[in-house]
Length: 187
Image (cartoon, rainbow, N blue to C red; front, top):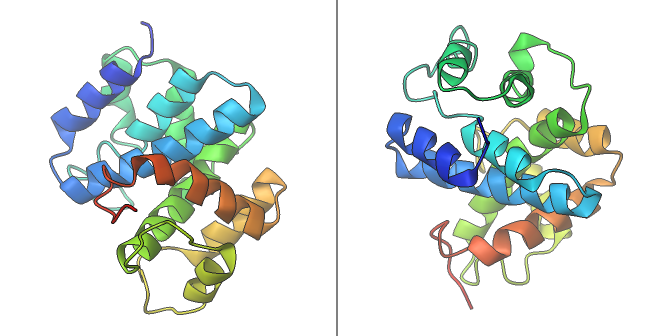
């Protein structure tokens, strides 16, 4: 089966009705695609993987089921094992190796994309002018976007071998073109 964005979006929207979860998938997709382009990787595969990383969360919102109980559904739909193992590896609790650039990038972009999106939601200008320094300051406020695992944000940048500020700047740049789709103010 050919992996396409349209097919991944169709799968995502069949299982995910929550607007906030769909927006999270779009944000992670934009960030992962940014890195795929940067490194000359398969942008369709990487983007589809990012779109689908939480596709089963509404059905399986607990760690004993997500994302491991979603993997058989992806197999039934014919998605390649490379995509499925990357989806599984993004979950810290499974302890799977992140031994490919795709697995590393998905993990690195998941929590940070959500956090940058949250930062944009509380600024009148959205992502326009959002500096890494401001994001780092918000990371130090435990009550802001409390559901974001800060340790995974830091570990993700380290996994990519990037300074945190550079990773933040990349994610901000990746999300800016889809700000309106994410419900963010645009210039």
